[in-house]
Length: 451
Image 1 (cartoon, rainbow, N blue to C red):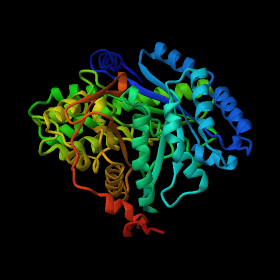
Image 2: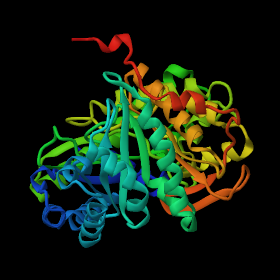
Image 3: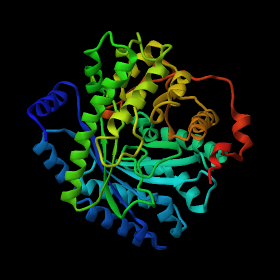
């Protein structure tokens, strides 16, 4: 039973504390669209997406009006396109264009799944797709791409790290007139998940139903507002406060997901519990950490505070919904978080500290601008480092870095909206090229042998 207090509290969280549903994402299987004729395959892809998702945006807007809860994005994820395009034996860019046209036709913000899974090696279709990513992202508006290069079970494909270092640079170079935005639509994963509703890394896994709805909640501002009421509480109490408020946030996500599922006639999948920040004032994960007692995010103690936040969010949210999934934690995308931007510009938050923080949170080195002269080998080494954290800790980690072509440390890239503004952060200048050029496979850790 929802009482008057619950209703008023929810209204306050929406109006004053930036509470929203960050996304409802429809996952669509394209396995039945495989055809050796690329024109026929692309038509099947377009037709299936526009059929399944024709009412997605309308339904989301109806739920927004009925519940008074902002749903910021309506999105689509599809089966990794490398699996669909392999039968065609040619460049899969036409699939990206079909996805983009379908996304525009149904009105969604973004569509993910221009994806390859190469944690243990490449097929010909994987290589075709990976090499086409820069062109695909430069010539489409709403398509997002991801590549999984490692896992706890398989180890890390160092050859794939090397390739992706080059691809990330090429994505930035091909979109330099748009502040290198192509690289912002590409994520490199270790231990990627099949039901992630958040972009740019969402894809619809082969173990998922033909079509389903996943929900991503948000609410850093709500958590910070709750902590403000306990300025002198000990850290145990802080954990309890976060668990309580996370339960309330997740309950709203469950309600939205159930309604969308019923009206669209597709199964309800998961709620992703991630605290997803925005550049808006009062909607920052960094400010939550500072509310715990840090003078500025990035100083000593930041990793401990983030570990507590991530754990409490999951413990509080898990009881509020039927199934949790996706990435579920606290995101730390630099350009999308006002507090992270301030800390990076002040020099308190550096790449090494961010890397340490990713060991205890979701999901990785996210939306970080690096100098425009950063080499492909350095980007590859950053990817390998982050994948190692994911592999050893049996967690999802990712890298979304944007080489700011033509810019140096102290300058910035500015995309506006949810993508925000990214200060160019310094990197170590010593070379990692010899390590990356060795190639091969970093073996899986001993604790992967669980069978």
